[in-house]
Image (tube, rainbow, N blue to C red):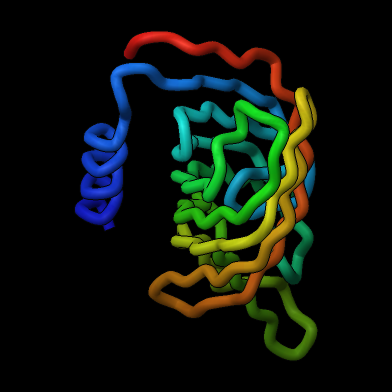
Length: 163
C-alpha cells in the first residue's frame, strides 16, 4: 500500500505546472475518507485531505476516534466556479471495527483495523463553497464495506503562484 501512495505522490509532483492554483478549505460532513471535520489543500486538479471521524465500537458502543488522509483527483480546477467529478484513495485509521459477545456476555475480541477506501463522485464549487457527494468501497484484511460521503467546505483562500 505504501508503494501505491508513493507512486501517486510522484505522479502528482510531476504533473504540477510552473504556475499552480492553490486553495485551502476546511470541511464538514460525513465521510470515512475526509472525516466529519477535516481540511483539504488543492493544487490544480489534485488535493490532499485529512480529517477526524468520531465513531464507536459496534457492540459495546465504546467511543473511538478514526483519523483519515486522502489523495483526490478532480476533473476540473476548483479555483474557478465549476462542477465535475472526483476520485480518491484514502486511509482511515479505524475503518474496520469488530466485537463479539457470547450468550449476552461481555463484548470481547475487539478488532480495530485501518482501511483503504476508494471513492468517486460529483462536486460543485462556487467562489467559496465546495460541495461533494460520492460513493466508494473500503477494505482491509478482515473484510470490506461500501461507503458514501457528503461534505461541504469553505475555501479560505485561492492563490496563483510559482511552485
